[in-house]
Length: 154
Image 1 (cartoon, rainbow, N blue to C red):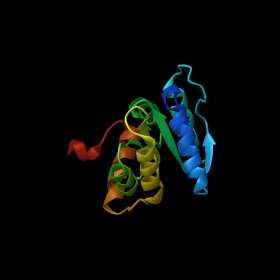
Image 2: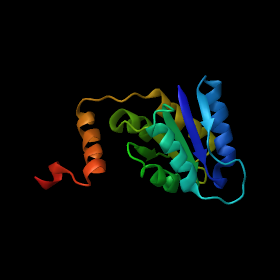
Image 3: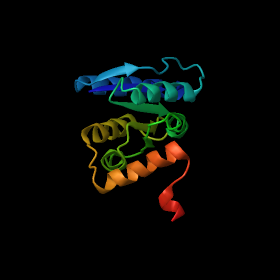
Image 4: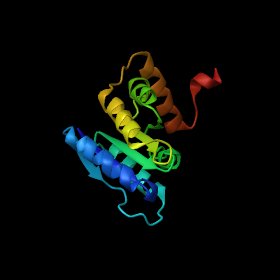
């Protein structure tokens, strides 16, 4: 497995911890985030990770900013991305199983390192269940492609 990881200045320490955690599990990690505490703009890292995921250069992505919200919003602007912000492992696991999320995000100012590791482990270990969930993921794709949803117009 190969994951891209990105962050802003609020999440340098957490990013480094998560990278080490993933690498210890044999997961290749591509760091496209920042390594300085100097203020920066989270959309840059969110975009970089999302582009890599959408292009199939990596199997998924991990994004970290202060809350996880802003960086995930940036990633979700890239076609084909389903980035989910999670503050606990249960939602992380279900985001993959039910929504086929391809990027997980969380906030360095919201959760601690151990919870972040648990979230990443839950997400990495989960698999998309397909079935009835595929219909819903397809609906998300329809919205993305057409800016409409036929089922909502019925």
